[in-house]
Image (cartoon, rainbow over the protein chains, first blue to last red):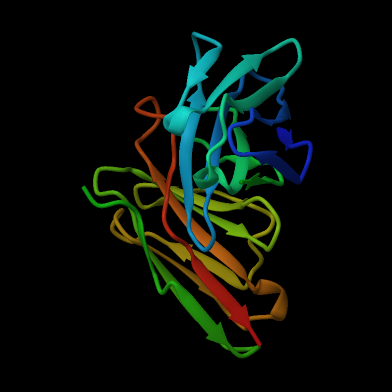
Length: 113
Length: 115
């Protein structure tokens, strides 16, 4: 069975600072990895995904993530935080295309002016 | 192009009542998923359909829960004899069939409150 651990349930950064949200996974087979963002009382929006190929993936809103197999990690970064980035971020893994997602517990990102 | 829609957005019910939620996926998507999200947690998988066939169910899906996708389009999730522990956000997602795409697109969710 696969699992996802997101270190830090709350992360606070200043506007313009680097955003780093951590995600580690466990999977017995090569994983498909995803980051989703959730704004209050809304569903989840896909930020980016890793399936195969290039390990550095770019997503929407200036976010990117790097798949590191040796570290079983898929950390999310953004060079410069905006106030509008304040939301809950979820890392997820699946073991087959189109299969169920297993989510981490989420990280709430707060952006200070 | 419309996204995934869910109805109702909010439902308040008394313990012991039955409730039914509806999900309309993106029209060309073959797969439809149900997840449950409690406050402060990540979504947890409940079940999914490939067209009208229910392919997998989580152990979270007790006997009081039933899901259908009768014509391979919209889906319903019914909870019988609701309990306070059923209070959560119920999320629906859809995706293309296997080999056609990996990402799931989520609806806005139905927030259930059991009093």
